[in-house]
Structures are given as C-alpha cells and as structure tokens.
Image 1 (cartoon, helix red, strand yellow):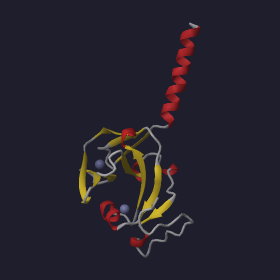
Image 2: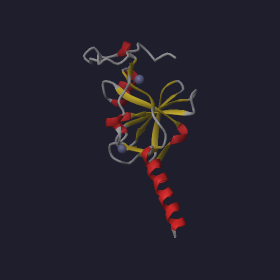
Image 3: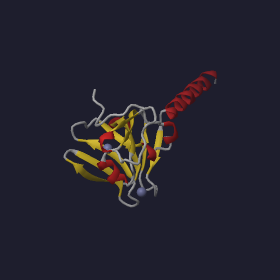
Image 4: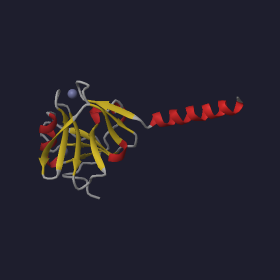
Length: 152
Ligand SMILES: [Zn+2]
Ligand SMILES: [Zn+2]
C-alpha cells in the first residue's frame, strides 16, 4: 500500500505540474474552444491596419505558441486569407478573431491574447507596426516600439 500511495502522490504532482502550463481559451459565444500546453513568446500589441480590420479593434494583442502545443477542443475555426500566405482564424458564429498563421512558418501560430482565459497575466512586451498606428492611440507606455515587425 505504501508503494501505491507513493505512485498516486507522484502522479498527482505530475498532473498539477501539467495543469500549470495548460491554458484554455474561447471565442465570445463559446463555439470555439482551445487549449495551449506550451509557453507564449513574442507577446506584443500589433497596430497594423490588417489586424485592426480583422478584429474590429484599434490594435490587437498577440502571442506566439508552437503549433504542436495548440489544439482546438470544440468548434470549427473559419479562416480568411488576409494577405498572401497569411490565414486569420475566426469564429463563424460570433466573429471573434482568434488566430494568425503564416504558410512560411507552419510550426507556429499566433493567438489573440484576449481570447485566452489567462489574458490578465499575458502582458504584451512591445509594440509592432507603430507606423500604421491610429493617431488617437497612445502607445507610449515604456515598451519598445517597432515601426514594422520586430527584426531579429
Ligand atoms: Zn464564437
Ligand atoms: Zn497586425
């Protein structure tokens, strides 16, 4: 019994550790749900016109995850080719903008941070496409500002 109790304890610690890197998210209506099992990188606010129109918002907060650590758990994502080689994913029912992926980078996918339940803890670290920023948005928050993509 001591042996099995130890195994149970280790399994429980393992499950708790796994949950710590599990994040979930959804669109506004809940039709689409997803799970992320890896870490975000490239947390940023994008001010480009394309993101604005795709989201209906003055700018969009994005984060990149490995495609292998991202999976849908409910719903069917709709995709729209917004520029050559770029697919933007959205909910076909409520219209929430959820994903951004490029054909030339099939191993990664960008997720709209506001769709992640942990969004309050996923703070953008820089701004991109400030050259297209709306003049009434003040992005002067001390974070690095890049005129286009962050290079390097
Ligand atoms: Zn929806
Ligand atoms: Zn953008």
